[in-house]
Length: 83
Image (cartoon, rainbow, N blue to C red; front, side, top):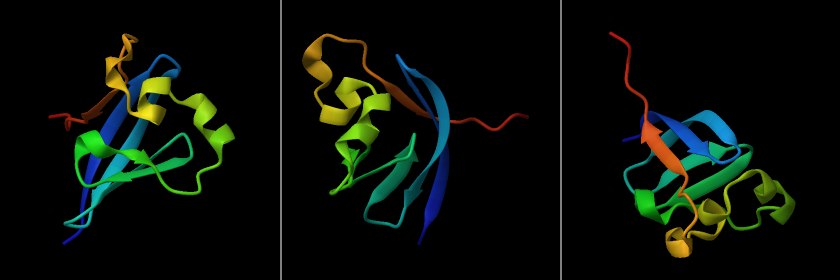
């Protein structure tokens, strides 16, 4: 079963709307042209073979997955539907 979740990504470089896709096993999303995947929300990493220069537009913590660096952590949150 495939499910899609609208999401909002925010970091020091700006904001972007994206979609998190879940196939029942793996979560996937794309932010600023970079594809990420992981089995859990916390496990998102750039897909293998990603051009390192494409990562320049993303917060360092998100690229390297090192949230304890002391820098503000990027935020990825689900979007809420307007009522």
